[in-house]
Image 1: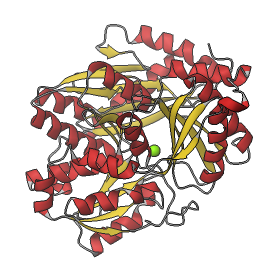
Image 2: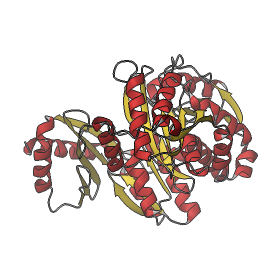
Image 3: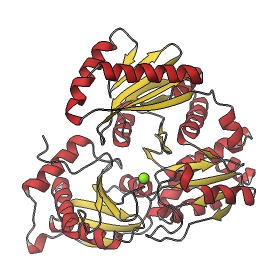
Length: 451
Ligand code: MG
């Protein structure tokens, strides 16, 4: 059991010099170093204003516990994860707040396999942190601190190994890249040039003030990218979040295509290319992906929502691919973590191999209508409501690993307590818009009946 919680769904996060101070991060470094028990630990970070200050705080903490720290510098999260495994580190720490606004920063702990440590290991780190049972070393046993170069080159080679480079080169795409003034700028424009693309960049100078746009790629923040794609008649636009583990794409007409669609396109292509495979899918994902998996003879493994849970499950079942609707694509044979540059390469390969534009690929997908609702529910009532919901939905075809997902013949509804707000979320979908609304209403009714 955790004494107190530090880790959220994606590492420890906080506001710089409010709750996320250098002394706090040093202690986090000491807790992580104690957990690792020494060894060779890689550290890397995204382009925030606080990253040099906080990475040095973390390095001091790690070295005090006897870990030899290798400073990999600025790099996307997936590149640091890749390097952790590729170069045989005992683990790594990433200083990043991903898509959060500029005043935030965060601390992620990666295991030797390149994937974030699972929740039960985070609990161990939290317990060390709060009990202050640090592995402080004598003056003669402190860890060494060294620079480590070459992560980005090795990572780009790793991505290209999984792509049909010749096919992409031949297509000669024009691509606009928007890395949100952060570390995606160090990889994606260069990777795409190596893939024979003509690359145009926007917001590609590293600047922790995020002057171009906020680091979360959303239709509202990608207006600039859309207009450039149209103006230069590009084949594709790609936008990363602050640590480039996500990629949201803009099609040839300047329309932002959300991650549920691009993820489904990637799953469809990979199942076809691989002649089947295991797809891990969080319960929040659309029936669209179920339909594709069935059509392509793949098999489906449901998991709870959360990228770390998805990654760990992928390792367990040797999964080919997974995705989240926010633009996170996990390609198992490369590494089972969200990886924005890998996702971009795969999409370009699909466009090259099929001869279709992103717009055409999306139009070719089966359509589902999604209706989202919410019902207020105090946190302390959530468990009781869930138990009642379980009773009310008995006898239905359903999945109960994270809230309740009821699978109907012509649609589905996921009813799930929010992890952060005092509400229940209801996601209903069906091929017919009116039917999706009916199902959503039914879901809302079930929650209300459960009070
Ligand atoms: Mg991210």
